[in-house]
Image (cartoon, rainbow, N blue to C red; front, side, top):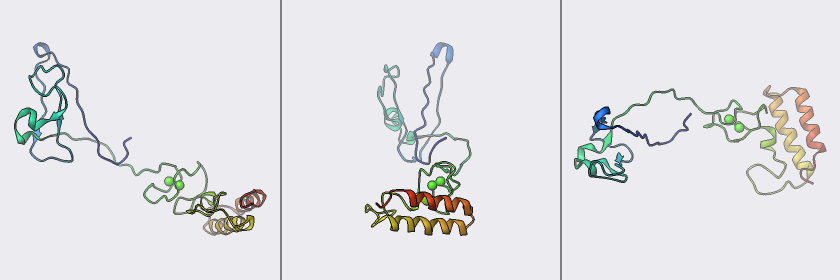
Length: 165
Ligand SMILES: [Ca+2]
Ligand SMILES: [Ca+2]
């Protein structure tokens, strides 16, 4: 699977002319991103032994790019598998199976033990941390993201933690 981006497409044709005949790649005048490049290790064709723009090798500006098509299916990515696609997920690396809200963040990611989310500060005290967890888990419960038992367990774990101490 390829992540969104720009990639090089490369073909290596190893053909003995006497038995394999010729191989070619149709060119076009329009250029997308970088122009096509070619290398001819050993210099059998007398040109461009290392990567050089096609149009320079061939000596024809019309050979600046090569024609090809790729077939496949575009699949939106959900890298951490929490059900929120990467484009909308504000919290990457959510542990597998952890309930998240619409922004792809778990209670633990919204109330990190180290300090308030999005800051480099620590919690003022343990109570501030526990309060964050309590409010966030209550919100998750009201959105049917977690059960009452899960909310209680999350709150209990926060109370027993040393976060903010
Ligand atoms: Ca996600
Ligand atoms: Ca996430």
